[in-house]
Length: 234
Image (cartoon, rainbow, N blue to C red):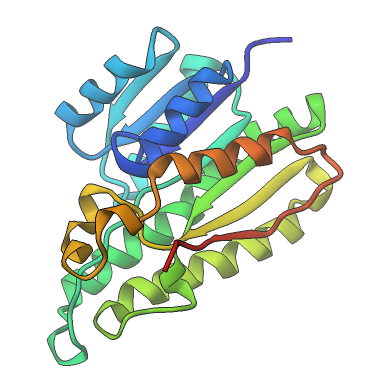
């Protein structure tokens, strides 16, 4: 059987890079996507010879199509799709700007929908071959516990959770497992804003989320896990 392959959106740092490193260690060839070319190049350098990177803006439909098509051309298969891309812009209700609302919706939710649309044929082929392909959509604890000033971010993550449940029902007979991962605050560049309220020692590590993905990989095709919430120490 050909070596398995994975595509990690948002894979140039934080949770996505930790998941990509785990997948590389598990023997997957990789494509990672990030928005900034220099960060993509640096991440690829840490992942070994089986990894390739692409810089793309996931707010653009054509860019998502390019990323998935490039992965297909490069590796010829897709066994694992991870969407770890996301951003949160803290604003009170009276301060929300349409451009910030649109950007969060596009990156946090719309990109996952379009990526799965594009990747579905490859994932179905992998599911038919060995009974299991895996889709992991990185949501957030904020989907169900949204801070007041992150209302848009929390809403986009709640939409992502709902999409994951619906997608799992649609793909149930195709050998594809769709799981949303909802971690509490993870120590990454994105969460530096919270370090005045939550000490880094109390935050989750990116590798905690990666280990959950490893667990999902190792479950039998008979197992169905629609969502995993990962809390932190209080």
